[in-house]
Image (cartoon, rainbow, N blue to C red):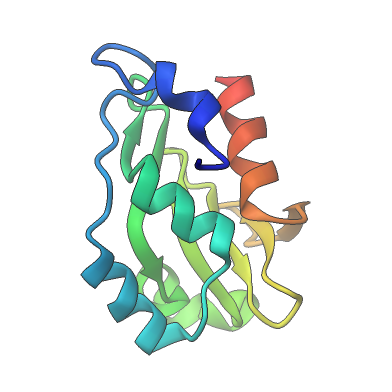
Length: 132
């Protein structure tokens, strides 16, 4: 039984998580080869619930982790040691602070301020779903 089985009612078409698609385990393995062992709650969400657009374009959950240079280019020094997993379509990016026990952080778009927003992915995603 998945730690996210209580969210299954949100997976139907038209529901908040209805546009998410489970991520192929091969994609997860590729991410693990590149970034090391990923947090199990994150992996379980991707494989049992999925990735994609949450709600009516309210949040984007990527199918894998994104390096800071892909998003921030030359400004990446402020966001080193963060691997990004999603954004709110308004420039706020969320990811794991890999040098701090994979805590979840959010980066503000104007000043690239990094703030810890959750101790783990499960706490983050559940709070985000509740807010939407």
